[in-house]
Image (tube, rainbow, N blue to C red):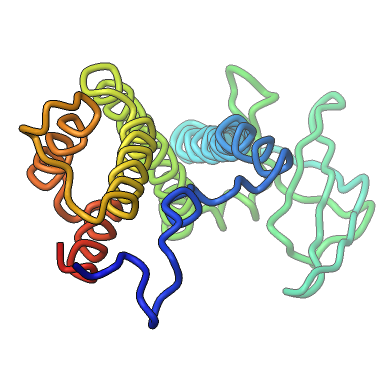
Length: 249
């Protein structure tokens, strides 16, 4: 009978061959534990900022529609001009005072007014604080408003759907674990039984027999039959099959 240790391969050490890889350490455990909470916080922050920006754009669009329908024009005075630089060039922000000290902001970027210049302001006759400069009102168009809202809504929706999908997967995984057991526990059990099976083959130079009368040997024989049916492609099944083929048992 052929020995389980051949000249072309070292002796089989089932415990070392089948052992699970060492964990990445405490830091890897901490990162894994924090991955979902940190991801949820980042997602909540992103969605919150996007929601605020969408609310601002929707409010400004509603204001523009109301002013175009029922707005009253009055004269305002530029009280401050703020210039900021960016990759796209210079941005101009005008603070305009109108009526009895009310102020509105024109961030349309037009550099055509200086401090002290008079500009036209359109305000809501029922709520004078709701106002826009005539230049900003004329430049407000849905050709950029709607795409801007879509650019905020779509990524936010995708992120929320992604987390919902992940949550569904987690719930499904927990259901499978509750009903069928933890796959990691099953894998560890297969590795242990495979190690015992290979150790038996190395020691006795034969396969375990289900009718031998020995409880341990019969259990190993039953395990080998069951694992070939339940998990024929798992690592432990392939390893034991390779060892049996190599030893011609």
